[in-house]
Length: 390
Image 1 (tube, helix red, strand yellow):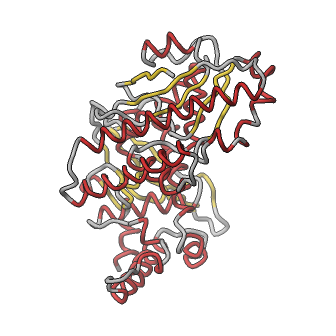
Image 2 (cartoon, rainbow, N blue to C red; image 1 turned 30 degrees about the vertical axis):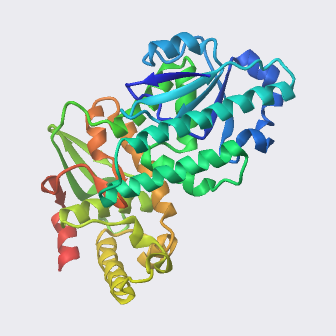
């Protein structure tokens, strides 16, 4: 296995996705037998998963030169744990896919073991860079150790606490999920420039603060539509008006979850508070020994009422109680909504306002939903304000 470093941090791949990079001819010839690789527990170690991606004539030309040179020869790729300089690292290997499946499994088994060893090595170095003095650093240290123990157990063939370890590594490294990683990997190795540039650039623009900071204001408002209702009034649609360096851009999201999450985040920032992901978690998981349960229960009642007032002021067609049942005690629909919000904003901003994307997207920052603009740059339509605060 060779290790390639990437200071540009272009391919934010999930650490547990191993990509088999095949030409169209190779996929046609060997795809059938390779699809069964994930059934070998001694190979996946209970944490890895193999995916096939079709590579074109040339890889993405912004990748490290060493990676571009080797892409035509190596046909297996995985992301390994970052270096101390938060440099991305990729492990690459060449496997003879023409061989019988047992030989392929044995070769890949060696590769997977080397990946585990390299991840453990990098985590060791990261932990040696600090002493766990502050609470925050101590927490990071503990999380790194849990991840390291997961790789150590996998390497020994022992039972792996994969859910916690995988979740923590994705959190501490700020990595993408497997589905997003698959799209990035496909974009990196094929030759469809427009598709690959968009996918890789979108992910890069999410995490990297642009050099140029556009001036952005956002206004929550009801927009007039072209539709006339039976009573003769104009039908209105809830959205956000973005003013980016003087250009007015109306933004509408495709679902109630997306629209309300984005707008309630703006409203909460306008009010100087925040909406937390934990506000939607089961109380049983929040209330622990030594915690004032009455205080938490009272806060949850207050939060539900606070949320209801703002939801009703925005005139959603769905009743608040019906919507709230869908997210109460399970914020997963809101996690899904964040991905949808990002897709919508990217499609609107990528051509002419790419620098604004970083500031406009919604993120879950330490458990709090956040949009990267100042509260001074948030406006609420006066009619909506009246209904909220009357």
